[in-house]
Amino acid sequence: MESKIKSNIDKSQEFLRKKDFNNAELILLKNLEISNENFETFFLLGAISGIKKNLQKAETYLQKAITLNSSHINSILNLAIIQKKMNKKIDSINNFEKVIKLDKDNLEGLCGLAQIFEEDEKFIIAETYYKKVLKIEPNHHIANHSYGKLLLKLNQHAKGLELIEKVSGIIRFQKDNMHIK
Image (cartoon, rainbow, N blue to C red; front, side, top):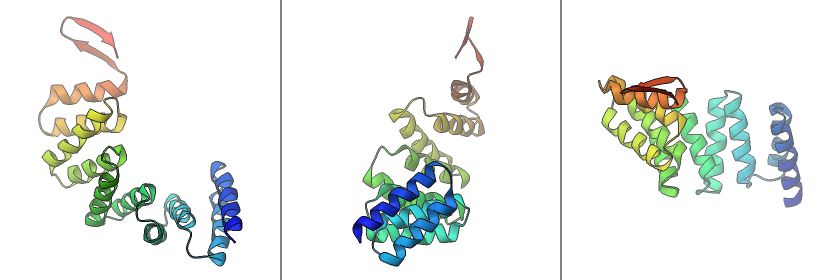
């Protein structure tokens, strides 16, 4: 039974690599006929449902995966992202915070929180999370770009443009010289 479930997961991942989401999903659904207790099956079904933009189904599958394995960061992270798309901000924030509790340096979790707080115009809180990301990964593309745009909103134009230019690869002018970043 376990070997058949594992075999189906391996086959589904082959289809996923080929971006054949329908066949990957069909194989994983066969696992549910065998057992309702494999978190990886539910995680993958949740991810596929999210890709297919069936957010409600994705949320249900991911919640089941987390019920079976409460410390699976990717399940929690994907659930937070799905809930953000569904405009379930409180649930999304709670799940992004769970990710950070499990891995304090999780860049996707930190960025997710920053983006939600920025959307809610809680700019100082958003800035705190962007700074945490950039402290861990100074060249993080999304954080540099998003934080740069946030700084423009806060009328910190020079610093905002510097961050945006850093990741956009455009020609920059600094003091007396010009150089390409």
